Image (cartoon, rainbow over all chains, first blue to last red; front, side, top):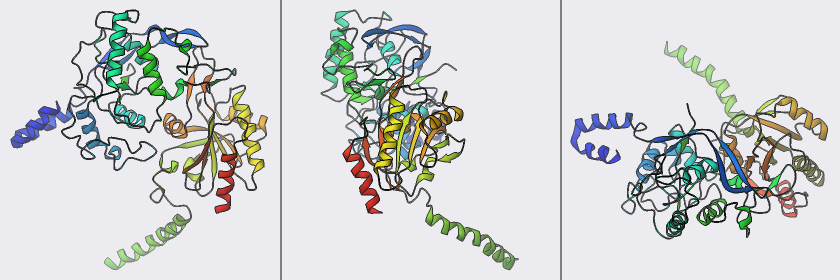
Length: 265
Length: 195
């Protein structure tokens, strides 16, 4: 859609009309797909036991937010441009490699997932789509599916591919979105292109500092202990949690992007 | 006609000028440092006595800011006692504001009961709930996170105190449970010494 708008701008008045139409339908162009309510077994252990989570239904964005979409957001919400954002909401790495505060530049493809965005900025973007960041369990549940199965997590080939993807994602710029088949819910690129912010990532408490009303540690993840992962074969997921929980909400990593979810209306 | 207008403008200007003077004592957001917490708006609170106030109204004095929830049985009561001890260890009054991250359950009556139990009173020690504002963003700015435990059994959460300077900048942060954080105490004392 962004391409259409840019092209149409070159054609004078008809272009402006097209632009107006495109702007009016900006949100209609973004796809969210419903995921049914489920009793989901999380790979994260609670009190040493595999957690069965009752997840209400929600709808998830089919693709991660792209560079072009984020540029459009910045044009409409200038308070999130890197030279105007409050330092409480983003550090100096925020969109640092963009050519200007509003233009990503030739280094970036429009269909590439946006990265170098803080948790605060990701939340603000989702709010602009009348959505929110997914909670960890929602993300994990959606990412458990592959193109044919709602829960493909016991497939060693699939797990090996995810591991290869996540290791590669740490070393190079994100590849374009939607080049691989979407999963059974119609959602693409979960776990393959970038790390993705979740709303509650900071409350996963990966170290022994985690506390609960009763006293003891509740979620001790990855801190040298694979035991906190009920499913030990999901090494890619462990890497993902470890990387996310090491971040501050103002951090902007070249490998962390996001997508949004919506609650049912 | 224009004379009348000018006269009216003068009359209108008088309260405006008075307002400008008052503004010097309690400045608006424009002159706040870029990293001031008081730039986050709205953050409207209600305390254990039912009084409403904006977080930014704390501007002008150092303050300790933390979060808790009222039905917490172990960590949060300890947190309150720890902060009382910190207050006693300082030569000057250092107000504390603890904001509930469970506003759905923590109404004024509940906050009042916890305050009475621990013998804390506003304006030295506020227990407050957010009435209007972004609770998750506030927690993230303060380095405080919480997660509801499955089955409604309370929260898994961390305990972090932030020392704000008079302009709302975070000057020190502590996650020590025993109140024996020498750096945090030293930062608070240094802040009073600088005044």
